[in-house]
Length: 188
Image 1 (tube, rainbow, N blue to C red):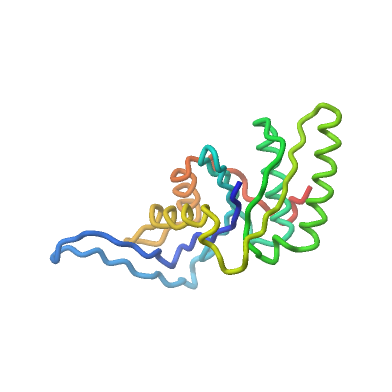
Image 2: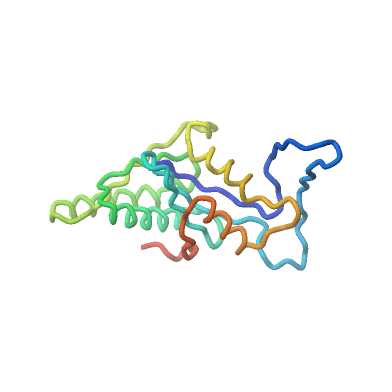
């Protein structure tokens, strides 16, 4: 399982390439933040890419990625994969501070001990084994390519999208159900 967070910007446009005629060229511009717009400029999202199936498991975040939302995401991820009968997951991710934090490492240890105890009782328990990639090496995580393609697919060159439109487009592109956003208070 390849895991990472991404910011879906409502303002910045991804790098796009397109064939056009000289008379009708595509104009993509970066939007500016309107002071009267109550919505955030960007939307944070956790994602997991399943290596075998290519399926994406997404959860949007209320504010930003921090240790507590990482724990809430990992807990939800283990629950979802447990329903599929998965027993162990190697989570490949970068060296973000909220991945390597003491809180996340402590939670992972407690979660894995609890998963082993469940398995001894004959129940489903999903162990999560982190695999941190070297610094500044995003090309080693295949989910990064998926994020880049997704940003191009959901962008709107003619207008700024609302948060609801952005979520709907992202979920449609990755064929995921739109779930309630994670909050730092959702830590199990």
